[in-house]
Structure formats: structure tokens, C-alpha cells
Image (cartoon, rainbow, N blue to C red; front, side):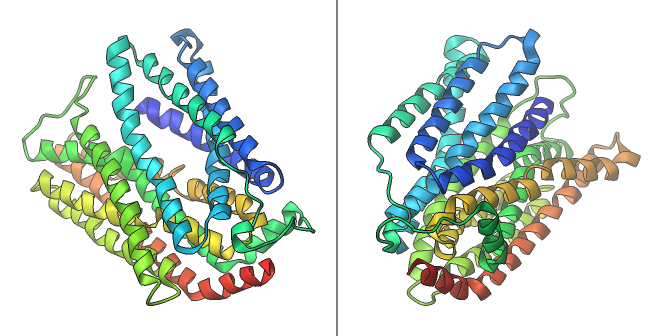
Length: 402
């Protein structure tokens, strides 16, 4: 846990710094080449990090930093290529398929990494599997994936004659109310998922200690059962959430043109209810807590692909890579870059007077995690604000395109 809490900010910080750079490049140069180079770079750095010994710990830290740079390249650019290949409901579906890779990749990472570690007898073998898959993916992108003209799906014919400056792009995005509010809502999702990934397994362990169905772990290594169960739930709910979100949005568009932000808002507010119930139920029933986690996370992950689709509607094609990059920057800066530490600080402050009490350790962490539902409700409010301005901003983008 301590190592993760150390490596995680190194990765996130490098990701945040690099994302705006790749956003700028992605709006001006060949995206397919940038995308494949980023994947190749990520693969080579990950592979080389598996050969670092414990005597060169600083190199391992540096490698995590470089991995963040590689990952920011394709996470900033990939959605914009999809946005230029498809439009309307088909684009929503394709973006959903793309975002399915997040939970699916996480689940396969746990499985393949564990198998590789067991087969090779050491953890570094886990870092030698994914680079091979990355090299295959990068090669296929170069060979198979087309490099569409920016805006071709939006019926922009020929090359854009005037290229706006980066400063002009940033001013336009800052004035785009739908983009700003949906980015803040995305940060709320990131805040909750970042905190949950670190602290919910520990919270459930403490709940079982209070129920006297488990004993407190005082010596490493501790049981990872709850972490594995939570990881499996997160993978499944991610898959379900993305699919349900795409289908729900497609149906709701037949009733209202504001369907995208409204579906996100309702799912966020519903998620907050079930996440609150986790802290009510956990003291009596671990199974009940897992059920609340399952429903709450499914509703929370509903908006992954929809948020990206909102961006495609309200931002012109020649500005989308920059928009995606800064949305990711904002999400991490205001979200998971700090939420695990904030929750930990609040919990430590609450349990300071009763440090030896198992009940108070459980309650203090629960009280700290209660901040997450409030942030999620705030995110739901931001999506409602997005719905207010969505049609105006979409029409402005369409007029610019025409």
C-alpha cells in the first residue's frame, strides 16, 4: 500500500504534465504516428523497468514517471480519431467500445500479471507480458488504423484553412460552458474512484474486524482477498456501466436532445445514494456492502463514454485533442491525484484520540470516505449545469464547422 501511494502520484503527475503537450501535438500533426510512438515508448519503458534491481530504486521511480508520459499520449489522442471516424449514435457506441478497455484491461492485467508472476517465480515477469501486447497494438495501429482528416465525420471537406494558436484554443475551451462543467463532473468521478481504489478494501477489512469475522493484520503480508474481490467488482461494473450508459443514452436521445448530460447527472446522483449505503450496511453485512458497491460503481461508470461524447459534440474537431488532454489533466488534478491522501488525512485526524480502538479505526475511515458521496452529488450538479448549456454549445460548434 505504501509503495502504491508513492508510485501513484509519480505516474499521475507525469501524466498530467505530458497530456497538454500531446493534446497540442494531436491537433496539429499525424495522430496515428504520435499514438503508436507513445505505445512503443510505454512498452519499452515497462519492459526495461522489469530488469531494474533493488539497488537502483530511483530508476524504478523514473520508469513510473516515463510510463505516465507514454500513457498520456494515447489517452489524449485516441478518442479524437474515433470522433473523426464516426458520428452521433455510432460514435457513442464506438467510444463505449474504446472505454470498455479500461475495466477489461485492468481485469486482464490482474490475471495475466498473476499468472506470469507465478510461472516465472518473480514479480518482474508481470512487467514482461504487457509490453509484448503493447508492441503488437502499436504495430497494428500503424498498419491497420486510418488517419482520418480532422472533422471528416462532421462533413468538413478539405483541410482547415486557418489554424488557431494554442492560446486561442484554450480561451475558446474556457468559454465553452458545457466543456468546463463536464470536465469538473469528470473530476468528481475521478476523485471518488481514486479514493475507493485505495481505501474501500481496507475499510471492508476493518468492518470484518469489528464484526469479529477476521482479525486485524499486524504483520506483512496481509490477506489480499478483499482487494481482489473489489478489483473484480470494479472490472465487471466498469464493463456494465459503459454498456448500460451507451444503450440508455441512445434510447433517451429519442426523447430529448439533452440526453447525454442528463443520463450522466441521474446516474451520478443515483450512485451517491448507494455509496452512502455502503457505510450504513458494512458494519452488519459485508455481502450487503459489496452489493451497494456493485450498484454504486455501475452507476458511477455509466458516464465514462458519454462524457467523451459530450466533448465531441461541443468542441470543434481541430481542438479536440487539446480538449481531451486538459479534461484528463483537470480530472486527475482535482480528482485521484489528491483524493486518497485527503481521505487518509481525515481518517488519521479522526482516529488520533482512539488509535488503538478497532471500532474507531473502522468508523473514522468510514466518516472520511463519506466525503466521496458529497463530491459525487456535486458532480451530478455539474452535469445538470452541462445540460443547461449543451444545446447552445453544440450549435455553436456546428456553426463553426459549417
